[in-house]
Image (cartoon, rainbow, N blue to C red; front, side, top):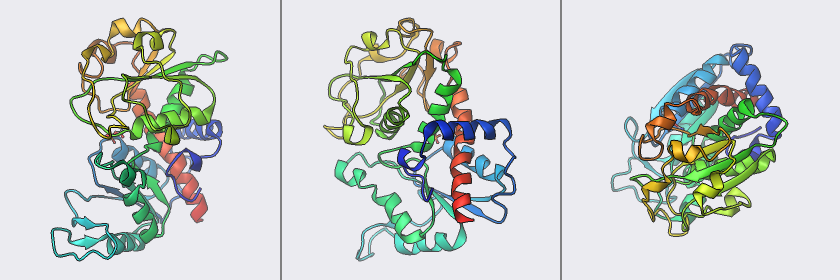
Length: 318
Ligand code: CP
């Protein structure tokens, strides 16, 4: 593995899950692997889980870690080639990434979509520029279109609760939110589920919220949420803004919130969400606090998944 930017970088998903579960059982088994190596993390946006789980994963492998919040602690970056920098941008990505390339061995970057221009977001300009000028292995800590570390943890979590040999029915449902959110998490989840080829997968959302199937792969869409939830073994809840009418909120129908009545339609479905979640807007308290919620386990699996990614990159460096 040279970089970790999407599902295509992980190879066989079942093999990767098995590796992650070994790290979960024995987090310090490769404590020598990252000896003398440094993992730098750049955050253009806030984070709780990704920041700490990646840091813990790197430290479990014996790496040193450094975190920089570009939006608060560092110089405002210019990304345009040939820019005349006489306004508010103080440092160009050419020098910023170039310097980071001198300081660390692996670089993680978080950069959300702008939700202004889909073509620009799809081009993943920020993460690609870091890749170009840092000349290091890059780990996506959530980019404009994808959040692969989250999806990897999601697959591990599903695997742990999968009542084999029955093929699990996984439903990804849109839910309301007060803000326009990126499509990175649902895009990525769909991409990984499609690549894993282990689940019956249904996506449900109001009309107008269709995801870009060039990114997700082919999707089975059911616009009737209740019908989609029937017999579900896993319900992945997430809000996202519209893709076609890019970044717009088209629906705030509270009936799409996941509550006990909704989950009763499933097959004692496990309830998943990447977090952070707005209680009683996206998912009701009764569900998050109930026995079917596995959101904390999902978050815990962010550590062992990140550890697989970093260990594979370290082995490439060696
Ligand atoms: N799920 C997730 O990426 O959480 P953070 O935004 O807190 O990192």
